Image (tube, rainbow, N blue to C red; front, top):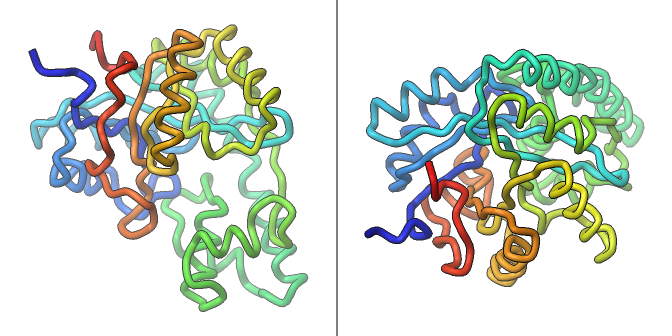
Length: 281
């Protein structure tokens, strides 16, 4: 029997429906070209690309998993929870995501004003050129504009210099609570996955408290192998999965060509010590 941990699954990526640069069908084509066999589109706080993504994936012979990535505020930081195997027509999920999206436009205008205050004018209008869905304007759209205007060499430098917490263009936002996000995902019949936990800047105590609460609320999985994790973090979060009895997920967090460390389909397999989230699908 084929080792399920070796399956080339990519269960975390984005399209123009949120802050990706490619349409859902084009992301599907790129995933297929990269050898992905099991794929999910997980746009931020939006399920509007699901029908196109599924149709494109199935036409290419890939197995498709419905998905979403919910923005959460926990201990004053932004955490992302991926929902897999969701029903995108679930009203509780749709309403919750709508409420989560509603503050983005005001936040974007505040970011533009903050950047204007340090001599960078026109950032809001500039960012809009890169937006597929104006309801989901994000820091990434501002970053693309700032790179193209020559302020920075790449998106990572933009965040480090202007848009990360404590930088002059950063504006905080109150997203969903962890309890709300897990509830919406479970109400839609899905499994809640802690996305790229290696990216969060918590103390060891806060880190454990985050996973304690996530598990207590009914969270079911954690991304072990993902585009922003190092090999040491693959091992660390494999151990976290075992300790908390969580399934393990895998996803590139692809946003567009050349924007991430890992291309669709190019991640290493899950460690043999974990049970993959797709094991029983």
